[in-house]
Image (cartoon, rainbow, N blue to C red):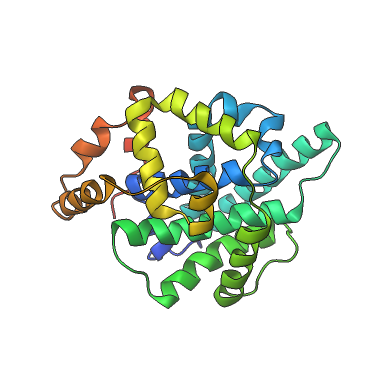
Length: 253
């Protein structure tokens, strides 16, 4: 039976590593906090109340799509759509299509940025492959205004970064929740990783500071990765209650 994402796809390689997946959501966590539609994330109070739990819920859905047979993946996308429609009905308002597009754009961008930061530059064909997977997710969700190819996406991504982000009280509160749930050491590492990952617009709005000590730490981690002994360092930094779940993100190829 056909898979939603080809088994030899670069997208499976990106999302099949725990650390790359965590980097994707580190970048998304920064940009989520700035999005002008972030109030929707506060409506159910699930994200601010439990940002790490929300992370793993989102990871689960994404991976159900990426690693599933086509019909199962489509069912997962339909479930995501239904959940959001339910929230809209409860609130009596509609999530704007640009907000949905922003989420897809984040997943495309941070999939590429995270893999390139930890592994190697992607080819143009591989970048287009990442775009295509999430483009098909957007089509299934019946989103309007999607770019038709990777080049058009790049232009729309630049426009969205300029138009859809702002620092607000939600931004401050979300970062306070990140700090509360992660502890100071993991939080400090999160902010530095975000600084290396996010577009300059995001970094500027969040005032993430300078790389300082994180670049040599990242270089050492990449070296350990090449030796395939990086997991002890990564796992030592994980919150105990999520360690098993994060270690389970690694998929053997």
